[in-house]
View 1 (cartoon, helix red, strand yellow):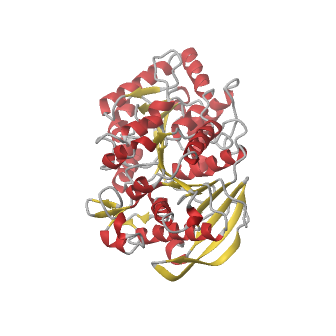
View 2 (cartoon, one colour):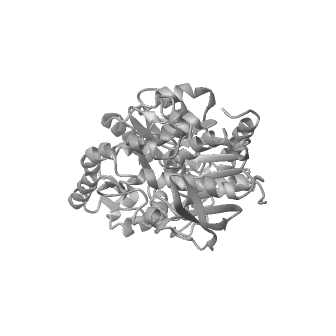
View 3 (cartoon, helix red, strand yellow):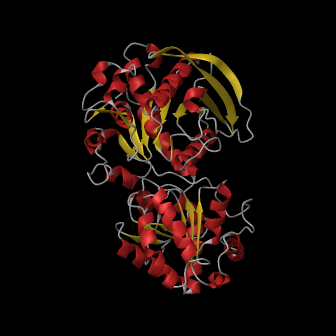
Length: 487
């Protein structure tokens, strides 16, 4: 019999193996932080065709894991790797996961995403059942893994193997719910009595994230402020009803930053490293970024603003696009890295042609350039309309690049706004172009006071949002969950 796992995370992404955004960073760091505190931790994730082995050896441990209804003849291959104290299991089925992208192409979502991730959840449960020792906690993340919670709630009614297993559903972004045609529920293998307004049904559709919220023993979000916001119609994305019903088991736990990776001290991606006591290297990083992005040398003494994120409205890119001409007339510089909405991408590229030497736009995402932008810019922009937690502002703080951000979700929980005495950045209450512009102007004015700016930069770098702190809070939640019966 295998040694019992204390926690098994189920996720569609995990850095360094797969990544499209912050979910992968969280799952690349939190399991390791928990393992460092003595827990036996595992992760289950798909084996994508684009997956990187990241130098880890993947070995086949089960060539024929039977998934079961509604796929009786179909099996999954299970691979395993050991990643810094964490066991990682990979679910492989070529027709579902060997694709150019994880979830969609520029044409839209894959038509069979419901079947793909239902298969993933069923395969996860089938594999954990074969281990011979049920995990104490199964921790599902976002809609792609949410059906695990529903299946476990059902399986506990007839299979004593799962009697002591508790489930958690973590919401990383409530806007992405996995909403599909009702037909797919009745083909999923879940019992018919799960189809109701407090279960898997959502306005006549099959909602995967709602299924996890409804049937998990506990629900968590990635910041305390976001846990409060999603109970309201403004931020609840239509799920505020079920979330208020589950409010007694809803917790908000702030994500952490992986300072082993995101740190300007000893960083292999930077031309020059630096720390709070020696900021000379940040000036070198700015000079090199200006040259790398073909910007004007005049920006060495003027504020250089950075934006890293998805090119879509949620991240406030529309607000930034509207402000670019005004910021260019001020003689500021901007570096943008990201991808997303094709219309916004095209506008940004047109603006780059118009403001050559002041505006640099890189469509796509590369990890090394992200580090250099964090280090080389003076001010970091996050005008999000909502932000469940945000990780890039934590990275910006550690790199000494004060953020200008909307005071929502995790941004409100991590940035001390100017002009408070211990300010680490600049915030504005809602995603409004005038308020955003005003916050940028506040930052630019403070940048002109070299002594005050240097003091703020040093304060930002001394902030501690390590995963050690977040892991401790999760351990408290696991203990709370284990101390009581299933919900």
